[in-house]
Length: 380
Image (tube, rainbow, N blue to C red):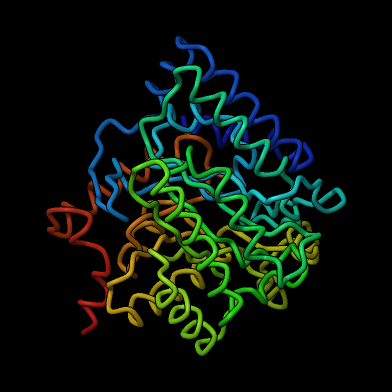
């Protein structure tokens, strides 16, 4: 089915506006997964035949591969992602206030480079409506077999000094329904948002979210839930060190590395097509294959800075098992893809999980947890 997607579906998508194509694909996934018969068919075709579990954040994951934030901003196709066999689902980014995002067009495909540029701007219905949708979903006796994550962003109209309240409000609304929360302070498409990655600003946001976490836990007589921070790939080494120190000292349970980049591939060598060069000239965050190396470098650095003692979620340019394996070697315990699903289709999960199982056997690892960070041990 992966070959079929590349031969028949992907060429058709090239003819469509990127955002409209994304919406249509998500709509089809929702429709197919809403019926028990077609949902079972999706699972039969796309779900990995064999899972290998990994324990992370005190939770058990069937396998390490999930979707990155942005693929399902509004929690539209939860049953569909589950049917496709993901290890976990991330919805959002979700902000306190509903917002339409930036003017269209705002998503662009560089097909030959397997890259996307977007300046969506956290378009979403707001955390209140998302919470209502999740309440309806779970109240209808629907359930998920995998953890549900929520990516939290700051509303564009919220001043930076009021950001902690914005994030905390969304977290409180979504807390009853989600298993993990990702504090997104690294999107390049909300003005000045990346200023929140640093020092006291980041600490105040994490502390506000931790307060909500503790209060909701006590009120529901249940455990607190993991809080992660998602960072940009464009940090300097000193900036990365500061972010890691601040997030860990504030009590973050782990880190997502990385978001999209504002950097662009070097087109001066003439190995980038004219159409891709045009896409790279658009403003916004770049994801996909050109981000792969930089995101892996960031994971390497974080693993070294923390002595492998802080869970890392690796995202950025994963479109094959080799990409995934490289990030695991760098120190990632869990993995996510966005652009990979766009260019490789729904079979990506199955191919990566199957490939990782082979990689573990080839390298003599008894579990995925044993493999995490292996490149650091080889180089020591």
